[in-house]
Image 1: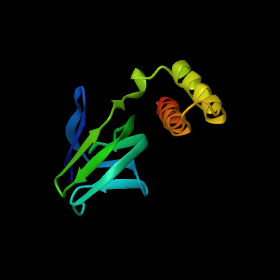
Image 2: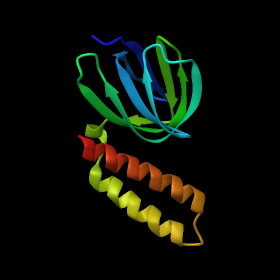
Image 3: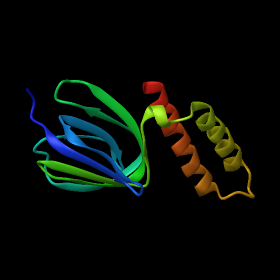
Amino acid sequence: MAETFRLKIIAPTGIFFDDDIERIVIRGSEGELAVLAEHTPLTTTVAIGTFNIIFADKKKKCGTLLGGVATINPRETIILTDAAEWPEEIDLKRAEEAKERALKRIQDEKYDTARAQVALKRAIARINTKKEL
């Protein structure tokens, strides 16, 4: 049996996830990052995107992280995030509409392009998470 570590995902609304896992794959500022037990200590930003958890029994669970920071230690990883969602909490139609709205706003000079790009990233992350279900 593989070694496990504690994962805590904390959002402004409270504890989103708190359990022992074998591995998590998150999107960091430099790309995807896989964290396993006994990982070298590290603090990194968490980009908007999907995450995948693998439990000791090899069951998998995916979700969406909407930015944040991760503190990784050999026996525990804590992710503080702006928001986290499970696939069943995501309304696919609403996410697709948000994506289309963001794409239009990126092209329109009267809107804040940076804000529209973040909205686009969030919508794409939600769509990708929902499709992984």
